Image (cartoon, rainbow, N blue to C red):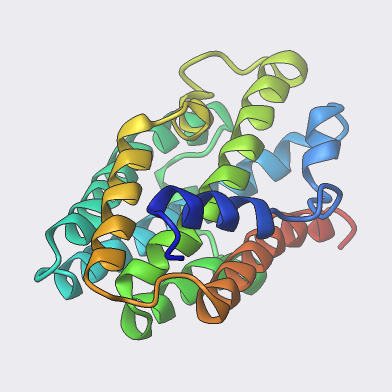
Length: 223
């Protein structure tokens, strides 16, 4: 019996959820034990991540031009990344970063593995499979951002504007969920083998690179 689009996405979120203790940086920030410098590093790395992801999403949208619901999903994500970049500027300012600091920062390989793999998916993966893998990641990323926003307010004195980047991703986005459902439903109706081993591989690697981003920053605290 064929699974529905909702069943495919819910299974991916459930089966690909990261280890609850896998993120070594978040507990330090949550307890106010991480130095402010690591928040600045987070912001600087994210500028590279968001910029790269936006280009990957646009490429996926181009590849899915013949599949309107899939194209719409990635176009929407690219637009969201542009909004996130606007909010990231306020976080950089709150961290005391100026234009020179942002321009001159050298990103860390472990933090940039995530967008590098995103670019690989944009070039090689079936776009509707990427929809499923990313949806599983969004659940984890959104939870991380919600906790960061809470911790930065409570322990670091950041205001709502400074936390806007985290609030943007932490806030539920029904329109993104609906677009993902439409995209996966389109793939299923078109006879695509949505889900399965390949999607699990994509999702597992996406989640692993997500944790690598956070843990690279955590490891930097002891360098």
